[in-house]
Image (tube, rainbow, N blue to C red; front, side):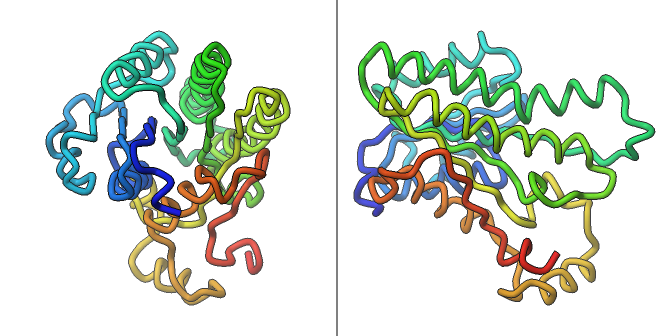
Length: 253
């Protein structure tokens, strides 16, 4: 599978840490040219390049606010000029916030929906228009979550946003298949990252691990391999699907 990615161009939003960083690393190891963006205004580009399999010449990183389509368009244009036509887009940017539903504010709603859902639509749209104009196909992978199906207490907006990602994935797949564009999603289970590091104590993580059929929490690399599969030629007849990578969470929760 990995031979497929030699010289492919991959763009990843939310690619400067956690799952996105692992995805970038795996693609770079497979020979792809990788561009990541993130909102962190103080991230070190050289540090990210070193982490991405040491393929410094084939990795670039930029600060981009994915809720602003103009910034995303500039990022995609810069990637194209540097590496050539983008083949794979991974929408992975995401934020998380716990709040009782009675205390949710309009600001809370707007912020989570803007990053977790709105950005996926307009980033995908920008990429699809480029592919349609060039008459080439492409693959879009969206990061959903088990919380698209499983309610997380005090995380209602997050759950709604990820359920939206699932339906958005299906809608775009139905619309864009005629252009040779595949749209799929991965739905991670509990993956220890900076996004959720405050959710569980170490003891709670251990208890959660023991409760899962596979008896372990997942890793960002587990999700990266799923993203690569859905992006590869092995998945060339798969579109509009959601691959849950959850260690069996939905079987027992």
